[in-house]
Amino acid sequence: MAFSTTASGFISLTVVALSLTGSADQVSRSAPAAAVTASGGASAAAALRAEGIALGYNLDRAEALAVFKKAIAADPSDPGGYRMVAANAWIALLFEQGAITVDDYLGEARANLQRDAPNPVLAKTFHDAITQATSLAEARLRAQPNDADAHYQAGAAYGFLASYTATVEGRLSGSFSPARRAYREHERALALAPTRKDAGLIVGMYRYAVSELALPLRLAAMLAGMGSGKERGLRMVEEAARFPSDVQPNALFTLVLLYNREQRYDDALRVIGDLQRRFPRNRLLWLEAGGTALRAGRPALARLSIEDGLTRLAQDDRPRAPGEEARWHYTYGAVLAALKESASAERELNTALARATRDWVRGRIHKELGKLADSAGHGTRALDELALAERLCRQDHDAACADEARALAKSVKRKST
View 1 (cartoon, rainbow, N blue to C red):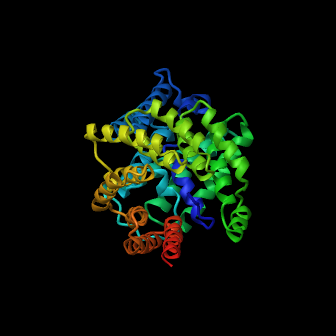
View 2: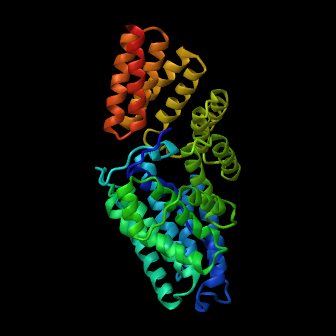
View 3: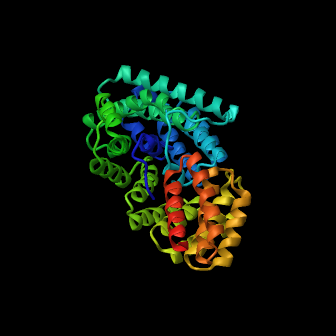
């Protein structure tokens, strides 16, 4: 799938790359001596944060929040617990927006996008927690200006603030200042401790993202202190994915996005398989696997993933994201269409259309319906479907879908002349 080369790639990558970023296993090495008491508060907090992160990645967010609060109680001086509470609230807000797969981060970003007002309880939870995390991180940085973990903690807090501003509030331009601070602090952490590959996640992700910007924006980002370089950036993310830390699973999720972007689909599927083994209750990983296999041109494999995932979905009584069921049926319909099972594909696509909540999803569904109509020799219907697909995708900033729909329509017209 194409990836926009304007400002779009920048925040699209940060969303995944910053989710649940933390470094609980690093705390005991560099926390202030007063925080490491005989009761083992720091160690207990680290273990609780690790437990909470596993729950969060398994989509058990309420349980994760309860554990993160216990981590704060165990060590209230550490910014990590507050940052995890903020992360939990932020991811819940993204879930409420229906942002659930790689497809949500492969479209076009805009400097400012109109968003529905976020859930006020979750928004307050985020802001209260990130303010506390930032305050504690800044205090630690003032006390230990040459400590790698102090720089890491500050960068992680500002990274969350950048992503929240861009994704929940829809203000890409407003996210730049905290994003720049996050990059600078993690670059400093790496300078002080080169073996801390977890700090390379944010730096690598930003290097990759900056390399995708149009030249004027890329120069502006570099003048602001951010580096560029796709290959180096990707390598740093891969190193973070191999490095044992709380960031490791997050780096793996980031690689799913980057490998899809690079059309390295087999690598993406390998990482998704690893994540499925680690987080078997995260049903969305099977949706991700199906979408990636379909992009790879392997519809039979995609079918296995989607049908397994649909079984998991039916057995899962936890909340669905808005439009989630539409995404399952759309992907299944596209898979069946690729397998030439047209009647079943049309049935799934129409089911998806009835449940879709976003125009870009509706647009992609109409694109698939247009392809089915064309295959059946119904040229007029195909053109109607493809014209609607282009309009819906274009207005919802899905340029790849819109461009493909336009190209398909041209092909249909050529065949009819």
